[in-house]
Length: 528
Image (cartoon, rainbow, N blue to C red; front, side, top):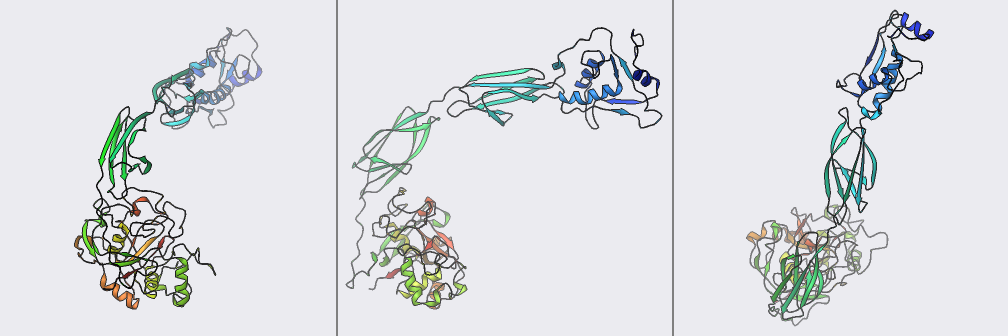
């Protein structure tokens, strides 16, 4: 304490210095690591030396005033440092106060940023509107003005600042921020120019439909068709050709920006589809004749249960042109009360049988019936003097005589030829038929087959009229006893993905399953 002051000492100051006291002022609270050179030290010295504004303008600083000042001032510049102050908890040692006498000379100040820890960042870009990332965290968009960041007790911090704007090259920079200082970063973002390639497709004969990634572009010859390769210089596309009476062709081509890619194709004619001799009794109404003969069943490009591709011979048979409709199934349940919703045995369904039929309403009459189990389909087929198709019969019919094709109409997916990708069922016959005159062999509803499901059945499949689980099927057909093995559904449905529309795709389900995408159609054996 400086006692040589030419001024009267305030009575409160005199009293404080005459009483015993033990005081403390700490640079931080418990468990806070505080370096020797910190905000606390500088703030302490600034006040004692008269370099900062006094709490009370009387040229004296008491311990209480100093502690209060430091406790509230230091965290403004370092949020991790919290000074503490007080007196020893002893009635004989807490009456007085330490007193510091400020220098007589006129007080002077130093900039507060000498111990400030907050840095200011400004980010500008041309064009503006770029997303700003600081250490991989999105902060906002440019312009970013006077963004505050705490640099800590060291008053210095390195950060990674990035800018992203669609159609422009990204920019990243490592910036060093300093407490009490402003750091600007101004950037001009380089625009990315989209690249294009050209494709030329010719065929012999010409006039074939050209598809690029499943989208119809036009007929051959197709010359200098421009394709956007995006910001990359290369793009892979699937190009397909289809011409009635000729085998389809598909190829994956890699296009390079700034270059023209040619594809010349000689289309191979499809052999004449074998026509069956129509029996003297004629073809049953609403059915199509599927001729006897061989076909290649399965797909080596599909799922494991579609392999291996193998040759199968199937006898001639009739198949329903359309999937069984709500109106047709309604006649069946009206004639067979044991198959109504209220009377069907719980052994034959999963609890949702004909769920879409409410009261006297049985859905749209010409839409395929759904929520029918394998048992319900079997019962209907028996009632109309038919049966469910075997897997081999179903796939032969779906292919329509087109050997090795992915879909009932060819190799290329075409949304105008099947109901899929959502929206519910559609009326039967809405989409074009295949070469055998069968409608909706892909999409609309899955179709029950007679067979038991066998994941490895193709590896040991018989050549002639193969059927999995024949013994159980015979018993179920005659007595409707319970079968334990899953059954097969084919063809995909209105809510299916594109892969399920393939003629080789197989799905296994419990025979009691009923849902809004499962229906069926029937077949009938051709009498010798």
